[in-house]
Amino acid sequence: MPEPTVVTGTGTVVAADHFQSYSVVGLLAAVGVLFVAFAFGAGRLLRPVVPTPEKLMTYECGVDPVGDGWAHTQVRYYVYAFLYVIFAVDSIFLFPWATVFADPRYGAATLVEMFVFLGFLAVGLLYAYKKGVLTWT
Image 1 (tube, rainbow, N blue to C red):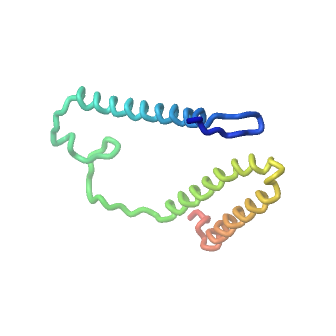
Image 2 (cartoon, one colour):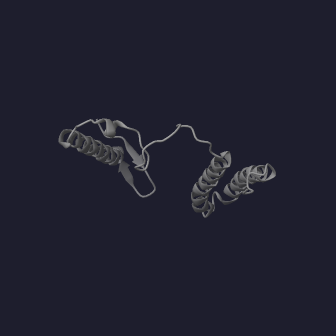
Image 3 (cartoon, rainbow, N blue to C red):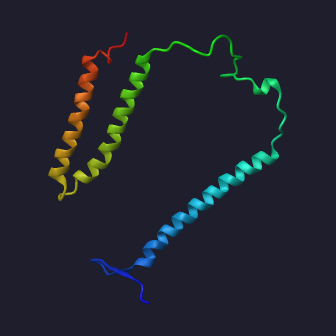
């Protein structure tokens, strides 16, 4: 049975060669999983297990817990973190856009799509500004 082929502009490429590169990635992933499993297993076998009440006690930063577990926190810190995540994701989308925009086949369509995307982000930023989220008190 002949192997399926894919004809490209530069010549003929055998499909089996294409899947061979995936097998290398799969093999490396399997070796990585086995390496991590071996490291965790060796750590479990070699570590001493002596549970004491002090070891089982909850602590944070080496300080013994005192008082109630509930603490009052300001919501605005979470809002700032959320806004940061939104604009960090925005920058993640801008880098691939810049590479595609250089291609003459996709230039105009990509430009329009990115300005729509940036428009949505600008509306979100304007909404946060109008709600007073961006003012530090």
